[in-house]
Length: 106
Length: 128
Image (cartoon, rainbow over all chains, first blue to last red; front, side, top):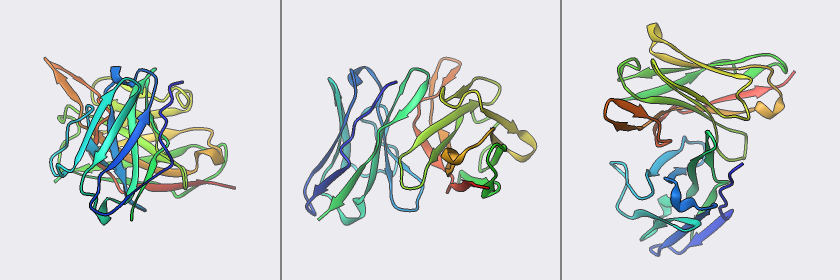
């Protein structure tokens, strides 16, 4: 089955740029969605179709997809960005989620 | 404003059937032209897709659960239900329902996995 590999944790200094990678075999050939989840809350869609932002999501959130790695980038990181982030793709008749990355804003 | 609300028993005995309902308000599910999905999250773990359903159209289930899962609509209650049979402790999780933003080509609608509206989630514990 298809695997999406994410680092368990990423840290970023307040106001700096955070990059969260999501690795998968030829992921560039797939559309990647990204979700943000804060403790005890439902996930929130922050990026869909590789790099599109839903309405209401700040421009600070962007993403790219190339080769075997998709990357979520959060510019000018804020304390409120601290959360778990999940990438997701479709493969072999299933939506597959990465294991999630906990973003800590220092 | 679109809202989703999961409901169902918080405790299910092993080998029994888990039944959850997702009540949708703010839009009619029969005319939404959207897929509606269930995603679950075991305590302290990541997200896992359970399945998605389109009114009057296709249903997709996670292959790992396909033999035990059934999703359906109740149009009188504007809701989507999830049935998971023969549950074990491994099925203990918070179950979320969500709307798939979808993709529209011509007169056909496709799921996209872009779940843009979510319910608050319902914790289901499987225990005797």
